[in-house]
Each structure stands twice: as C-alpha cells, then as structure tokens.
Length: 87
Image (tube, rainbow, N blue to C red; front, top):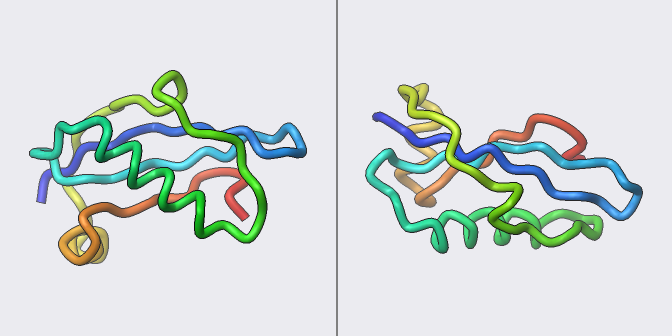
C-alpha cells in the first residue's frame, strides 16, 4: 500500500513539541479529513495538548507501508507514528 506521510508538530503546555506523522492512503487528499485524524489522536492523549493547525501539519512524502501499518490504516483509515514527546 502506498501511503502519504503528513509531518505534524503540536506544542504541549510544558513548551515541548510533540512530533508525529499522520499516515494515510496515498489516495487521501482531503486535508480537513487528515487534520481531523490528528485531532482525534490528540483527544486520546492523557495530557493536554496545544491545537493542531495547518501551519504545523504538512504533507511530507509518499512511501510504501509496512504490512502492520497497512492493516491499521485499512482498519481506521489512518495511522499515527509517534516520533518525539508524544507520551
């Protein structure tokens, strides 16, 4: 499965920035839907986060998904790859 990687940064109350990627099928081009996936992820966090906006969530590149990521995208429509300060 070809996926699109959306590089995302959200400020936490302590000033640190969460860095995560929103992974979606390459065919998904609706930015509002992609931002909604990121916002849904942030709501699930046990701590407060800043707001997510288009200035800090941008398309980065396309790549091939691993079988595990492809399965999760098929299940939920997206996958979040946590990079920094996400827990």
